[in-house]
Length: 296
Image 1: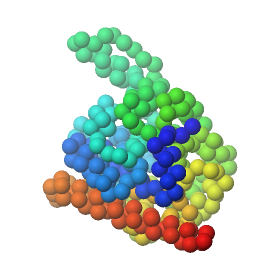
Image 2: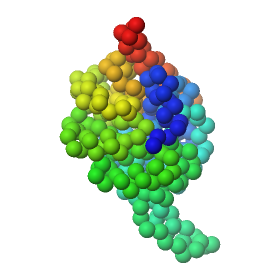
Image 3: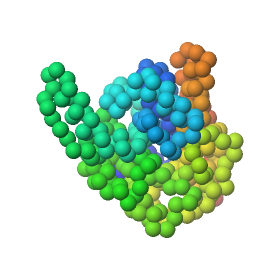
Image 4: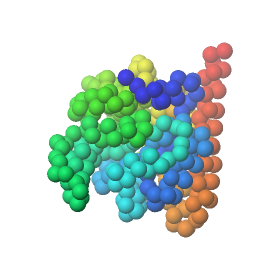
């Protein structure tokens, strides 16, 4: 089962540009402007990071963004308000960690019971409450980097019930039964990790990208490559290697960080994000051209 909005993006036949930002970085209002700038710049899907205090998959760039967002007051409840306030056309995918998803319902019930008018309620931990709230706010899918495929069935079932995609990250070293379990449970698209290690912008395209795409060729699910993409030329190179989409995070978070450090106006930072988004989206489209010519 796939979310209709995400399925429509890949069914259009052009490479998907999937930017990522941490929601609430460096503050709630600025972050709304930055995400909407990516939408204007050509985003086909937008991945929104919901901050978690132990982001094991992230490099220093995104870790710093998570710290800024948490210090500005981002919480799961505020994240869903953030999504409600966004004015974007691209489908939204939430990227976060499983403990936060698993504990969400119990924490919200506990918080409600502590309010003056709240009733003493309780809720067992589990993924359904988070997925239900995500669906209510319009989230189309989830990426959960620390969730092993062997333990994903409860979340997979909740996503199926509420119509969300569940995206898995496949590393260059993922193979055998573990890869098979991921591909049996993935929907929407598979996040192909372009290189080993954590997230972060790089100056080159890893040779592991071609090998990873070749290893996944037998599965009929869109393949979007992330980790290290920085320029339009990188995007072109990766799409020409056979990717159905590109995922870019750190190169965009760097723009937010620089603007924050320099105390630049929100509008100026948003303009830079929109321009970078257009560069990456255009690069991905250029990468499609050799494939089209080869089929003539």
